[in-house]
Image (tube, rainbow, N blue to C red; front, side, top):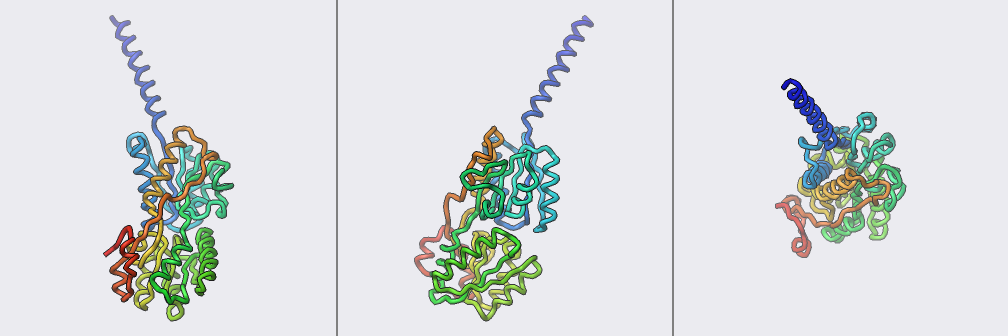
Length: 322
């Protein structure tokens, strides 16, 4: 009888050990490095997590997520990347260009997905969009800059000077400014630059454009977008319309944009993560772009500064904020 009990006890221990090992094998850990907190990047992250959950990777069940925010500090982004490198993660998600650059430079032993990165090749995080070539791939939020400037002209047919706000320390912003310069020249528009290196300089940068521009255009610059309320307050106090490059800035009060949906971009990135967790090689996965553009208009903001919205734009708008 004792021998039988001992056998049952031994088998139970073996069963629990095997079950524990199996459970451990089914648990995944992902590190998320987000450069700064603002609505677009937050939505990209939320879309990513939601897509993972929809495809069976649920936080708190079989998935652990280590979320870190660099608060727009490059050295902090570097520290986060170093930490993730040491933690033997299954995958890292880097949100926004600065976080993508630090992750790509530091992490070589773990798959890295990027999102909300304007030009991954120019930023040096992949070899090419079609064949990334290493452990990094993901999605780009490259803006239709030319179409966005054309949108400004639809609102302001007589526009002559447009101010553009950006941080020259962000490669993604520099790329967009160069595209804007090229398009502005074709349109006969003078582009006036106002630059910042941190959020405390945003108000002064906007003020420097007062009296010399007909409108302000904000690319997907992380510092500027995170300080959008300051941009809007200063500009609208001086009756200068602000046009954005992403929908959440329009929701906050910018006049309009033709842009991507960052939540859907995050979901797109999440689908790529599932493939990698199931064995796909990021080196062979092309960098993906947003699958559709949408027209967003803030009717209240236009009314507040007595700006007429063309009827055809109201009719074709995907979302109107009242």
